[in-house]
Figure 1 (tube, rainbow, N blue to C red):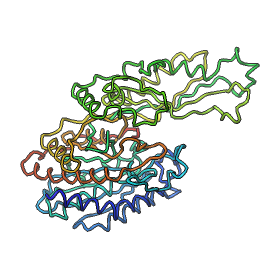
Figure 2 (cartoon, rainbow, N blue to C red; figure 1 turned 180 degrees about the horizontal axis):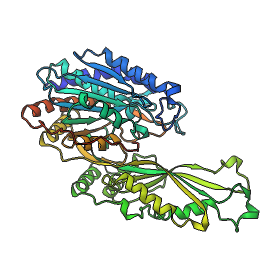
Figure 3 (tube, helix red, strand yellow; figure 1 turned 45 degrees about the horizontal axis):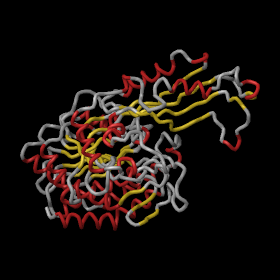
Figure 4 (tube, one colour; figure 1 turned 30 degrees about the horizontal axis):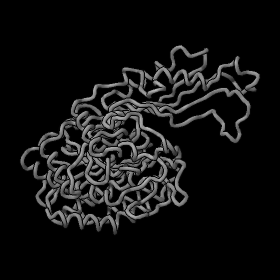
Length: 496
């Protein structure tokens, strides 16, 4: 492999083709079904699919088959099969994964930016979805093209690009089962939907948190009443809701009080967290737009990494029943509702966690209030299997070759439902989970951007690993490890 030639090829593809395609992709408001229930009528998802499908079909990869698979009542899926090339093994398989649906707009974008407004500023491409995860299809094909340009051997490759990851990948199990025979038995899974601690080296994800939560509602009246007349007699729905939340979270420290939502942290993950904290320093927390004077939740940087990756944490991501300040009268409101997003340790079962949450919040309603919890999410996280020696070497080689620094390993605080599903479906497969979501890239929030040089280098590293996978396959280090587990693949609700 000529590493410099590979870098040049990948960089040229990004500059000439991938970035222009992502500019057009960002313009499409293809929100995930959870955020656009009329997605099929609006047609934006189809627009995004067609953009990627057209580009993929233009790529000069011999024998490649590009198909948009549509199961009734489900979001579409792009399925690409690429035969082994230049002596690669057809009976082994590399599976590359990404998604094309997006999070909603969110407020707070800078005046010259917007979710559906692509803006190039230096090395950054701003707009919703470029980094999460529009680049995945383009980067996957660019990596394979870079290998074929040098006539380097690679195994058969399959690319899956789904369209409901941000809603919990609930359609994906049906597609994995539907396409099982064509997917085969992958011995290596590459996911391009994760984060990175910095833009200076390759970061691989060792674990992902799970997720549970939904809409908690506390009702006290059938209609609003004069607050001067009722306060002191009728309990405030907001105060009762605070009481309920105190059952599950220590309001002083943020620690989750339900012991069933905690898990023992493996010693290897603790060691990786300490090393990540050493390399990143205060970037562990100052990558976030903290206001002046704000302090993180712990002084120990390694503890912050573990808080983000292996400990449960509650966020309130939405509120209902509360009027905006501009129209708030002297009224004791009939109800308060909040959306709970509870991140879970990677090894805690998402469905069981949801049941623990319901039991804690619904028992003994304070003052006899009407309390309900509508669970929307139940996603079990993922803890990576031990890396095979060949993959660990290949990942580190790739980082040193294309970044000039060793690879780093760290858990991520988000959720990728597909990983847990694949872990069950292909229990012997190896995983390379990586991505471009680094400091200040702000996925899901305002001013989201894709760091273009990171995209290029990650693409080159993926090509490097696919090439090394072929060599390992010839040595018998990958043969048979992708055996399919019995039973169906079961998806779970959650979102990255």
